[in-house]
Length: 201
Image (cartoon, rainbow, N blue to C red; front, top):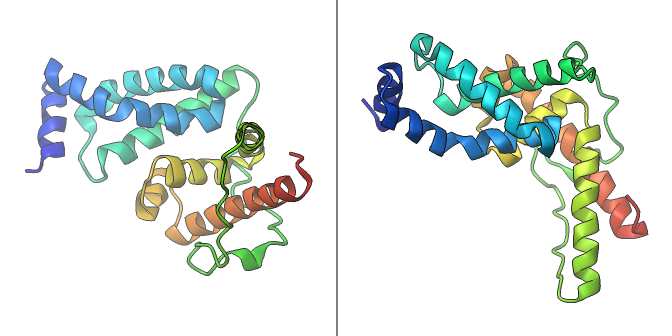
């Protein structure tokens, strides 16, 4: 039995220390997962609802996936529910329908950079201001991604989940996950290039 299995069993037995450890270990991950999906103001609500659902269902958790993957799936569901309540319903029916991007040559077949962006050096107040503007622009465009691309990009780049874990959590094939990640990166790269060339978001 590994450490995570022992911890899960402790939670299933209702041990306070085990519950606190699980929350301490995964709460920031859930906030990071939820923020791009619902915004910073609602991310804590999604995380709270995720913990409520997770602890209510923990007895049925069989350990066929990592606990983090299971929590990610719950968090995505809770984000959908919360947005529906606020009349900003996520459309899960159009997953994968994306016209693509003219920047296909920027990435290799495995989804990595074919030509990595050049490093930027921020050493003046003006460059720091530009960095803040770029950060705001990235967040703006992240929210504009289709829901499927946003979820995959968040789980891969912010949460650090493996392709197999993302595929299990979202009910997709690994190949589909890679395609969605590739398209999301292309869209953000197009935004970065425009920002770099024109200074506009």
